[in-house]
Amino acid sequence: MSADKVANEGAVQKSEVYQDPKAKFQYEEKNGGWYLGKMPVAPEQGFKATEIQLLSFARPHMRGFHFAWASFFCAFVCWFAFAPLMFFVKQDLSLNLSQVFTTNILSVAGTVMCRFAIGPLCDKIGPKICQFSLLSWIVVFTLLGMSVNSYWSLCIVRFCIGFGGAAFVVTQYWTTALFANEIVGTANATTAGWGNLGGGVTQMLMVAVYAFMNQTIGLGQEDSWRMSFLVPAFITGVVALGIITISDDSPRGDLTYLYREGVLARKTATQSARIGMLNLNSWLLGVQYACCFGVELHINNTAALYFATKESFNVGPLDAGVIASLFGWMNLFARSSGGIMSDLGNKFQGMRGRLIAQSVCLIGEGILLIVFSKQHKIAGAIPALVCFSFFVQATEGTSFGIVPYIAPEGLGGVCAVVGAWGNIGAVCWGMMFKFGYLGKFDKGYEAMGYIIIASAVFSVFMRIKGQSHLLGTLE
Image (cartoon, helix red, strand yellow):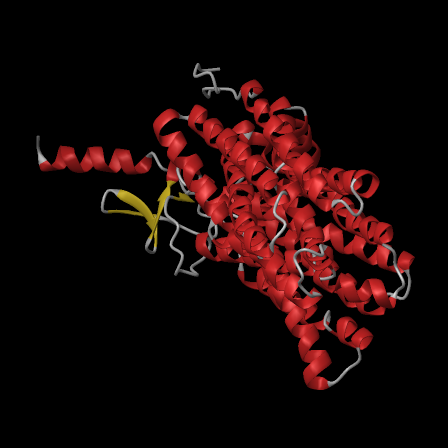
């Protein structure tokens, strides 16, 4: 074959990948693949990245990756900033245990409708504007947390801060838009897991800030917990400014610009919501997500109180907060592990492999929660909590390894439904404890374990177009 013919065929092959000159980023072919700088991409998937380069902060893929997890991390810290201080807040505002549970329920209830709305909005205006808006809202109401002076004002502030929990939906939308299908499970799980890590960090951070205010500066108990909210509000504000100024929505730039210039076909929030919300698989997976992320939210709200009030554990409120933080710290790697398991399952058995991973993790989570509920000594409770936490977060990772396949054309709507069910689950768990297990946390945790195990059966009914299901055949 002549050199000219080889060159001509190479030119034809290269020309098959079209790049709109109006796109912000232009990719180049080299070494048999397509790249932006050192990042390999898949042009057939809209130039999504095919690697996760953790030490890189390059635009658009890795910068979006890092802002995605950092923004959710900050949202999570603000969201649960009250939880480790509730022992003191309860005393100073003269609250009873039932009222504490009501504020816990409201803190997660506020997120539900916001999650339903924010997913479709990501398709319409892009994730970075959505995330900036949510973080800005959180900053305002976290600062207002310093001024609560009654049960009702506490309810209102915690409910409004809860809106920021919708940052999770934006995080998952963002990484799905930036990373290729082969690694999207790992990417989603890592950003969400590191974001959820805020649940563990806030238990230690708020206790440490309180101790600094109280013991080092010398403020009284009430002034110390009030002033503590300055720290998470400031950090969250800095991250919000970074997102709006130096990040990008997608591999080709910001969605509002790409829509305006005709690079991408404009999507409406209504269209995205309809596609995601009318898909039965979104709701089946959502119920399972209520049994993992919903459980995590409930544990974040109750663990410190459980350790501080169970007499046989014999730990004080500050130590209880530190012990409870171990649950959240598992997000450092546990949710990513679930994403990796899901991607490996996909590699060997397609969607069936992802569903198997999902079911196994749910069953393991339920069993270990039952084990945790039966511990009466702190020496047994801590390792049981850590093992249970691993499976909770791994299940969250396997869940969002499935999400991108349900309805790719309505990704925002699917993320909204599944994400919202996490908070619906937290509300249900909170109501269950408030009306059935007040003062009997261990029995409530045991009942939750059995419900979680039962939820694994929903995997059998998932039928995703073009994918194998749990019984192995293609839909």
